[in-house]
Length: 133
Image (cartoon, rainbow, N blue to C red; front, side):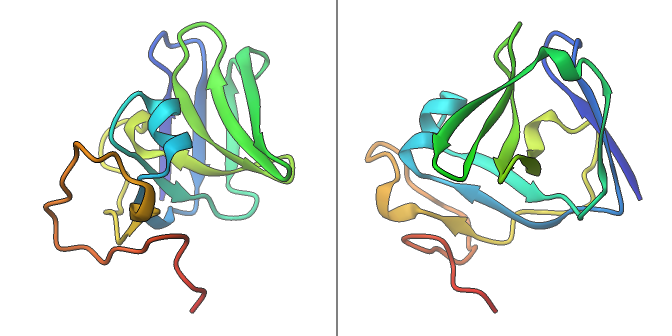
């Protein structure tokens, strides 16, 4: 499976080969602020499966933690994904063209969700990051 996506202004384009895994919606305060919304929805990228098609030089990373950050287009501000240890490991599903082939499987960091938002789906909810299986 090959997935493509990009930012709002179109300067940044990417491709993911191999399909996405571990999709979920994050309600932490950093995701809320970065997206300007109640939550951000991400999916994991397979090792070696992510490639920039255009605009890699237009991508900036805000280091939001010691080991990771948030990649975004420096022109339009679109949040493109999450970086861990220098590599883009998660993409924002809102930037995918068409069907990403995966649906959110959990809601995470609901312990810090916005008080004005009510989660109404039936997905599992975790106050923090879910335990590894």
